[in-house]
Amino acid sequence: MTSSVDFVPSRIKSTDPLHEPWLLTAEQREVFRERSRASRAAREAALSGRGADPIHRVNVPVLDPFDLMPALPRNGLPALSLFSGGGGLDLGFDRAGFQHAGSWEILDDAAQTLRQARPAWEVHGGADGDVRGVDWRRWRGEIGIVHGGPPCQPFSHAGKQRGATDPRDMWPEFVRAVLESMPEAFVAENVSALATARFASYVDKVITQPLSTRYTVRRIALQAYDFGVPQARRRVVFVGFKSPAAAQRWRAPAPTHRAPGTLDDGRPEAMGMRQALGLPDIGRDGVCPTIRSGLTGPRHTTSILNSVSAKRKFEDLQVWPNGVAATRQAARAFVAKNGHFRLSVPDVALLQGFPGSWEFSGAVYMRLGQIGNAVAPPVGYAVARSVAQALLR
Ligand SMILES: C[S@@+](CC[C@H](N)C(=O)[O-])C[C@H]1O[C@@H](n2cnc3c(N)ncnc32)[C@H](O)[C@@H]1O
Image 1 (tube, rainbow, N blue to C red):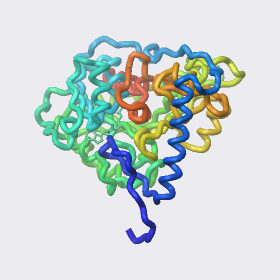
Image 2 (tube, protein in one colour):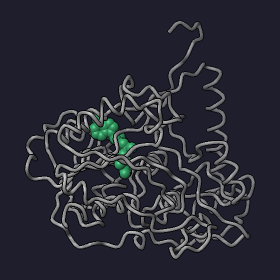
Image 3 (cartoon, rainbow, N blue to C red):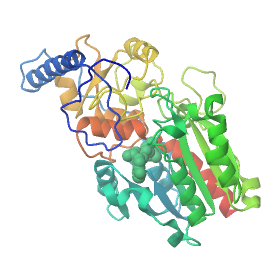
Image 4 (cartoon, rainbow, N blue to C red):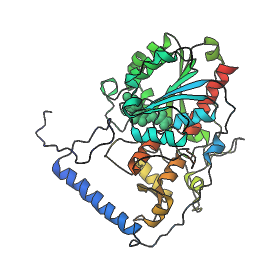
């Protein structure tokens, strides 16, 4: 560090071993502390009945994400899940009929989410869930698919985009898992920034070249609202097949829905954010802006805001995306300063395509982190289904 500025560490103990703290001076930290003290005091006052009178009723969502991913019969293909997070891809593959064979996830809270949602699954969490310690050769010949979303922070526009020089870059670990276990196919997801020119040589060297020695590798970009999820969320997905015939049969998943407000083309219209959440009609609606990828930026944040344009969109749709409440009742009680509808954790989960029965573990920021990091399950489902069709035909 060549700067003469004195940065001071946060006093909050991180529960995320991968968290990269912001460098802040004592004065800057004090500004954040004061802001969070004030917001905590306001929330506590509201929850103990000393806040403003509630404006909104407790919402009853209209969207049921299970409708976007009807359960398919078991297809007999075992799936290994790496970097499982709160289980977006895992749920998509499960609904598409794959047999869950194991999940690896370094965050205890996220592993707990998976165990709670699917008690019968084999879930490796915490130190036991660190993919770096696993010898994947033990699954050779037994596995249909390896899937995972290596951490996106090294590539995300919200981060420093250090790619391979970021110690959180886990793509080499994903590649190792595939080449050691040799599944019939693999699926890997990441932020769309990974498909930009900046990372072209990284993608070629670290992902495509090593995997192409044994697999036919394809790369596609998918948009969440094309699959009925009420959110604009573009992600890049790599799909690889060991058998050239299966690779040839594979078709990228076609959009099942059209964007809200677009001309009828025979497909159902994706719901907008207000409709999906069951909010009153204000004469306009639209998809939720991209929910921020979790566990980045300020520590323990309970905001899902990702950009200035997202802020404008939320304002237009009269939804308050900061200080997300733990429950719908708590969101109603804690009236937002501008009177807009305050989101709750189950609302954010719904906007990411998770059904109400999939509950997240941990503190609110940790639950939001798992949701924001996830592949929208209906998108995972569409990919999983397309892969199964190519493998089983
Ligand atoms: C982008 S998220 C994956 C989200 C997941 N695919 C989903 O759909 O919900 C990346 C996950 O990788 C986990 N992770 C990072 N390093 C890891 C490691 N060495 N071993 C296991 N998990 C790790 C992070 O804790 C985070 O939950």
